[in-house]
Image (cartoon, rainbow, N blue to C red; front, side):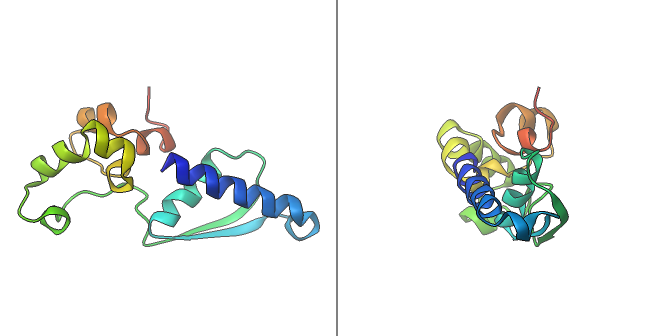
Length: 122
């Protein structure tokens, strides 16, 4: 998600710079699903953007957890969490980066994106 965040942030900044009159008073930012989380992350790390309103439609703002068998067959949530928090999955796949294990210590120790965007990372 950090790679996607960089691209989205750069595209939004370029658009604002290219049209200063239109964005002089700020803008409304709308994101859907994972795009809602990315839009919030852009806002979180961009002091140079004036966002008047932010709307996240079906966004995973608080993270995702549960319905584990929907992701990978008959795995329990504990098994799926172990997979998603393994090095490859947590560093390469987006779902692992917004997976929020209710075990807060495990979540903070292994999730590489959401705790940073939520200002929860040490």
